[in-house]
Image 1: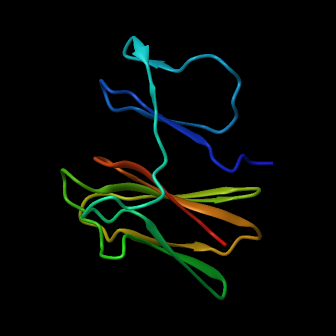
Image 2: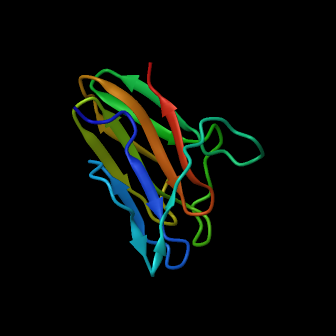
Length: 128
């Protein structure tokens, strides 16, 4: 069974991002130092709009980033949108200039949707 939350780590020097799907112990190191565990944010605190908005329609799950579309500029953009299910993980990579949204096929037991902003990091919305 897939963990409800897979851990995401980032190197504060080079920006490498690692997602740990199976925890085996040890310490993740990059550029000679320990990588930083990314805190998952679940509520908005300011003017930035990062929370994934989820809509389940017939045979698909539609995800939009923010109640107002998130910027998708070279210096501020959503890097990926991820659907975590009980038995699978689906991911859509995004790039500057694209719309901050995607559609996934409907899966049996969706648990949550996460997004990663290059500036404001990891955000999650649970699916009920």
